[in-house]
Length: 254
Image (cartoon, rainbow, N blue to C red; front, top):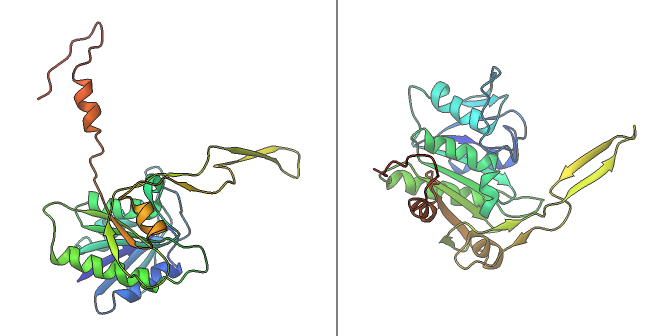
């Protein structure tokens, strides 16, 4: 099996190394950012050149975002030999619920799926110090299953694993997390104001049965959530069909 690995914690991150070791016996390629790019979401570098550095056999660093790295991996490094699966991680911390909208880890895997390759994003939902081995082994086993039973269209699976041996897993929906809406104002040594967004409060997780948050944080199970790339809100789409905008002609929905 040919595997392309990436992440948002950087090419030298311990979670990435653990993931590569979990695919022992497979043909592993790594194309990852040259430094941490957490919370970079799906940013892609269109207004500056990128540099690609080979840091080891089949191991490359890109001076860009996680999306850049996977794009370069699929369209340059592995252009003539597409991988069977893209795996991103193991992230240093969770990517639960609405975290997926900000996560560089998920974005790297999403870029793989957008470019036609089945993809898995995996995160260790634990504070440091981190031991990534169990999460990496679970991700490798899941990736092999994706390759063995390929879905009709490229799939993106978001995986969160609690600390310690994986005693079980559940297929879940995305939950909801709140980090607070504060903007913290501080003063620098020269008397100028600067700001931290998000505040300093604790994360709040909504109690939603069947969610990834509940599975990981309450039941200590690994959560596997399929992410759909079509984000159209169908109930609202149906509601909008009855709307009119005065002064403009409304064309029927095909």
